[in-house]
Length: 127
Image (cartoon, rainbow, N blue to C red; front, side):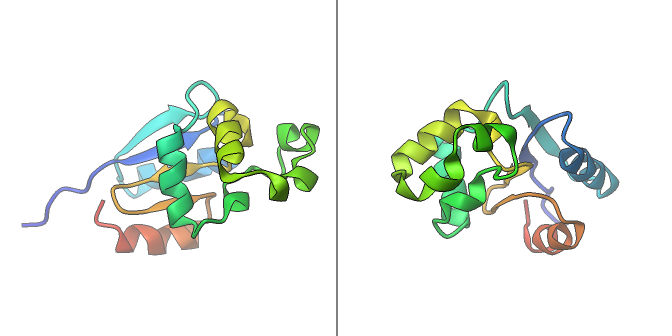
């Protein structure tokens, strides 16, 4: 007998069409997910550090580079000069800076939504 699949932790923004598509996808695939509003409850520093490991240390991949706040703060020019701690501080305080959806499982982490990619990730992920 297979062990039950564990829930995913999904940070999303309700007005984001990509997030809406990701949640519809999870519903269609009958995958349990704990949904959190990324602005009201941004990912914690520990969650961001965990994601950074899954993204091979690439901080830029965690930022919503097309977002208004990213542009307002001029992060395109500043990001490479930020220390990891400074970047994680920004992300943990400003959910709109975080690329979404932001998804963590017990053993994986990924950002953004492309159905083809999610098919592969979820096929490999026991949780």
